[in-house]
Length: 384
Ligand SMILES: NC(=O)c1ccc[n+]([C@@H]2O[C@H](COP(=O)([O-])OP(=O)(O)OC[C@H]3O[C@@H](n4cnc5c(N)ncnc54)[C@H](OP(=O)(O)O)[C@@H]3O)[C@@H](O)[C@H]2O)c1
View 1 (spheres, rainbow, N blue to C red):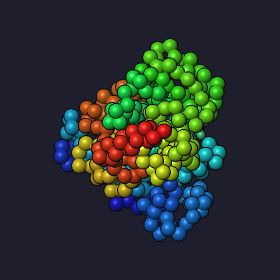
View 2: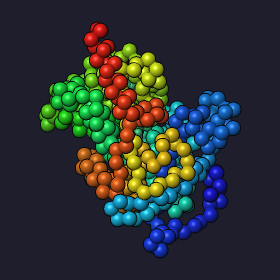
View 3: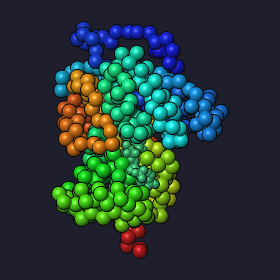
């Protein structure tokens, strides 16, 4: 185990014991999202004692943090084993939004240099480290190793998840009104583009009318769906399927906006969907977007809130690149291409990644629960 905080890093060779050759490696940057909960995962006492505001404040002065070594990942296609590391950029989402962009870049780049010293051959940017500024471009320029935001595979898995949830909730895609919240963002735009091929009506929801209009014009030509735009969040009440992926630092989707029987796929971290939805609406299916099964007996040696053997899609993109030996910048910048989404999906499936079962607010969603949501939605519609 390496020291907790960036300091003298023992250089170790990364040997593949299975094959007697050096192992390919990756690193993935995480950061506290729910400050008290996430700081407690690494520093239980600090997490208990400090308030959220204090964590926000102290995170500014904290160096990058070594979290854990990741082992056991094995390609189903080739048997190749790799190893990796979680390292943390200490900033919270609020801090990343408040501080000058250059200050945030500097801390992420410092965390990236830490990954280089560990021997990582490719670096993934988790959550807000991929959102800030130009989405990885400046960070990649400053580092020796290639970088990816992981957003291409996040898009693929989010769209797969909402399609699968629609099937389980018996919502025919071809008849569904679907809303994408945060539609003008990097992930939102391409999710909207992919869903526009599937659904009857697409509602693009964002804050900037001009950007929404531009997106609608671009998508409307080739799309099968009728496309509308809105700057009013409560317009999600018209949709049976909602994919939400904003960079808001507080929840924005509340129970009163949602129609009975609707599905909400929340890709945002921090979450867009208020915990009140789970508490007050048992006739709605809320799922986390972006969880996949990892090939091989993986041990992350760190609890980031998922059950064993599962990872975020953005982590999976980084791991897939290492398994494939593709040590190049992959998804960078605010425009994600459809060809990258298709390619990384194909490579991830080849190496054994699969869309995992559903989770909602850190709990597994069972088929029985989905059936119960369907029943209650039916009752709610009848009593209206
Ligand atoms: N689950 C995963 O594996 C995973 C992977 C990567 C990223 N993420 C998460 O995905 C989210 C989005 O990432 P991104 O790279 O697409 O960010 P982005 O490019 O910055 O886009 C975010 C979009 O959200 C919009 N927005 C913010 N607040 C809003 C509100 N109240 N109502 C409607 N729209 C709002 C922004 O609008 P403006 O254009 O007006 O600012 C922007 O268009 C982040 O939370 C990130 O942490 C998750």
